[in-house]
Length: 304
Image (cartoon, rainbow, N blue to C red; front, top):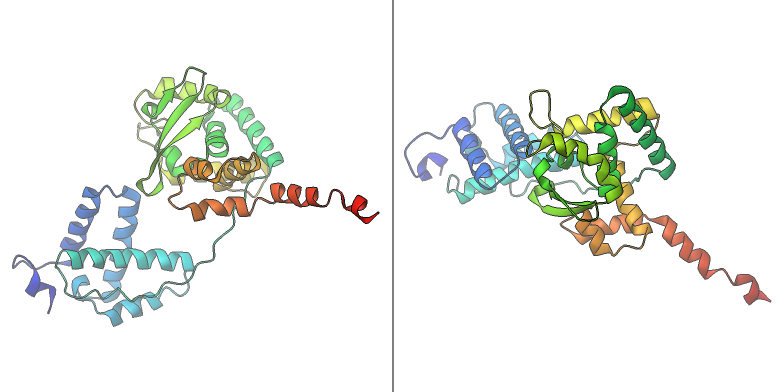
């Protein structure tokens, strides 16, 4: 049975109309615009591959053959593309636009869990000093504040790009509490220490309720722009290989160094799963090394 036979109305459901209906559904569920954009791009890729076969009439064999064209992509990319396609057909099945899900059995490559790579503390200091010097020369402290928000509050590039003045609630001790619009739609509240907040306040005074880091036209910067500018600064100005995300890794492992409870680290990072947070503790060799050294501290005495 084709989708035409089971559609609620007799209209022909074209690829464009199916995609637009899916986009509307995602929007009503609060899906982020970048995710919707990526979903649309993948659906358009599959549409071009099918070369005339409507998306809603695609067979499992056709989708499997399409997935084989991704062999040169990274496993992460294959997983991402496959997830986008599978979610589209789950939606179509739920909307009774199809009677069978052709993407259900598409395999996903097993991904290796990447260990965090925190920025070295000496490099962190070099980056902050260089960014502060740049702020004095250019009159713009954006990159300096981005480094602070990532390295001392654990914010992602996308979270920084979405910050508004109204997201900050000042506290009596000179610090603030920051409501973060987190990845995947998971909100969280992050502490901004008084020593750090003093550098953020000038941006709040300008932003009021708008974007904290606007473009020349007043719109919020894109996550890619925050990441790209910071990475270029780290590589070209500071001369280190670290990336923007290594600042967030530095924040997490530093909290673990200080003995923070793993659930407090999870809350600060906005992880949905405690398993993800545990990677930061597992890779934290400094505390582990101290414990191992303490265990052998009386070895000479035991041998006497």
